[in-house]
Length: 284
Length: 337
Image: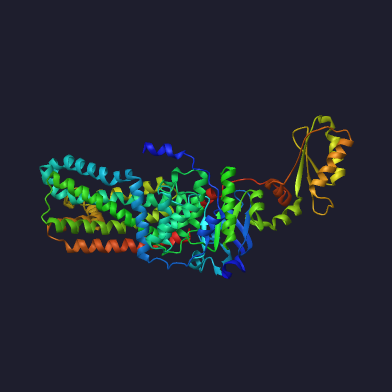
């Protein structure tokens, strides 16, 4: 990016506003019909794509971070828990995929908070478009990041010896479930992004929620060795249901009960936090 | 055209809004005629930004009501949004995107299809002298270019009412003049402009009517001429050669002008208002008389100037307190969460 800093100071030829030139753009034209809810959301999604194009560094957290997570835990726990890293990976890969992706959902809240702080959301909120579009579009952009992270992890897993019995279809269904849940879960962070004071506090709250949620689950070990009270929490934890459903899909033996719970949780997150978010968004 | 240029663009009664313990709006009344530039003049923290945010449907008032082209800003917010556009004091385009991308994005959100959106963006960039910078990220724009893209983004759909929140704060004089020219062009095409500013000079240059805002209230309203004549149209500043002559000079001034004379901390300086309402001479004639009276009294003047009253002097005259700046939006952000 070093070449761009020099252009910053380059003065353009002096601009003299010309009445004729301004007249051509100021003539009131016919108002086009307002875009559909989906159209507006996709346009906001396009903004997220453009931001990735201009600031590709922001993809670190969906590439480097998941790779580190997979390598670290596979080799740290593999031998002790399953005899070998390769053996452990068959159990562990869907779990670490969930952990990594659910962790990066928090950037939705951070991004929203930054947009508000900068003032750009004032512009969006004065546009006559479907109200949730700006937020839905933002999450659409994030969904692409989730898919990218999931594919990176799957790819690395395959290289390290992960062999899903469910084949391509099973893996695709697994990633699909993960994306549905992550989309729904992102609404928790849009809410916190709206109510918290700064980017840092959004991060802080996210970590406080995400660490217990991802670790106190079936991601790393089977819950059967845990004390009863912990098992109780692990059992109701949506991350546990998500991991069970994805493990089922990827291994070719689907887990209908876990899948149903996961979809119910997802619907619940959208319903509760989507509503809270929109309430806050309209009232600010 | 008639719906855009006749009647009232804004009608607000008793708008109030507090943030925690800060009373940002303490009962604002406004009547903004359509097709004109209306100035909200006041120091930072007076409530200008909050008023604009309420009128632009970004913030709900605690009390009172406001209509924009007859639509209530709370209950008919969507109808209001389709008629207005806001250029806020802070980032109103995405700094990570290029000029073209920002305008195409907003044009698409306003319902234009992609080819039409691109065409509109290119036309606006050309009219605002930004064609060369169209593929550069906005964060690399200069302050003046930045303001132009902000305004270009606001007139994508030629709004009926444009809010400009301190459009020239922080700009150099040339960029400020460019913004003024743009505002004049915008209003000449039938768009009503509500402009907030801290500069009396700016309101005077652009606005047909001005409301002076302080502590969340309108403390004076009228045309620039009316406002100025109500507080005196100018101020004379004098610096004497000999501080010992100041008492004598003060007496001469008081007799010539029949107004109180301010003695500055500087022992050779004096200030007095000229052109007060109700006097028979205008400011320059009065100033001339002061000079000749001083010369006749044998008082040596080193420096003499006659200027428009500053915002601070307007405030002193209207409120008996100087304009004390605080950062309104910081208070607002703090308290809104």
